[in-house]
Image 1 (cartoon, helix red, strand yellow):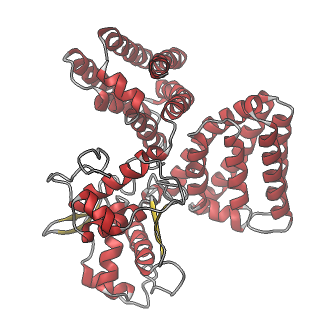
Image 2 (cartoon, chains in turn red, yellow):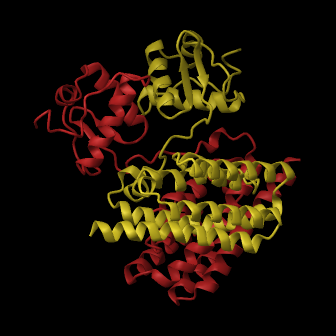
Image 3 (cartoon, each protein chain N blue to C red):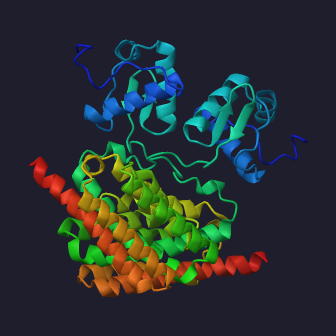
Length: 246
Length: 246
């Protein structure tokens, strides 16, 4: 690659931003503009250092920054690769740093009521045959795990993501893990997971199947209603937790 | 602090996770559980190394990871502090790594229509007098910048965040920058910023003032309608860009 022709890896200019942070930005841009896909290998340290006109130490620091942001992944003895869910990190909004657990859990549920009732309404319209198969499988998996008394939270999240995928909107499946997953790390949901009694287990299975059935029969209104009921059940769990804590 | 009594900084156990990543997790937990707030100083390297029973090199690596995730901030010669918007990073969902700009811009707008029509409807109910004052100021700032032909995108984002704050929901003001800001980095919005003609400028001012007026008079329905119109104008800009690109 000719250095002069290469618009992507511009030479780093001295600014207030630390050199490693600048190099990290340039590498990110390189990944994007060269369409290097998830799982693809990056050029080695020497090559990147030459291209960016910085030392290998800076490249190494930049790579560490991008590993921390889940853009890159180091495979020992193999090299540096583009991460699987590029750029998406756990708890991306820093909910773990909000001090009021119960308020956060309630507010996340309020957002879910807005977003997920929309999701299932649109899913009922847009879902393809393959989508319908996938949400049916995801729903069955949650049922199986609940019946076997296995922790179902991961399968539960996958069911909600599968619903979001039916909208064919690129953004909403990325939002779901934030609003579903983060709340599981909070007190109320840990409480829920631990004390998930037979009644709650049955309620979850029935709610999911009601949502599924409505989407399968392309009834968006019924799907939205079933989703709202389901989320209101979760709300009751949080309120119960709040009362116990007082 | 007695090491045995200290449940927060558990000694690091050998697992498959790299040591620095484990230490980063422990430091995050320490920040959370000790309620160390944004802007507060962290104990120094020596202290942390002793508490976690790892070398100072590992602590240094862990701190770098947390700086990359915007949990910590290093102030040269002063020490390590908890970052201002703890744990919230730019482009947290990795939209920059989605290859289809136009589809992403459209899908972001679709999400905004769902979330922001809800926001203004609820804002009209819940906004306090202080909130109303803040959204009025934010609206005026956008108007001034547009009238002076200054790039208004940052002020625009702040107006939408100010609206979101009126809901008193902790989550939605954190979501707004993701769905508003990221789209600005994309082609369609850069195009919009550059070619923001007089007609579009007037439309934005009028739309914002219509939303503001509806919230001030506590008319949620009118606010939602005005927001939807506003976002549909943005949609038209993207469609125009799409046509030009073909």
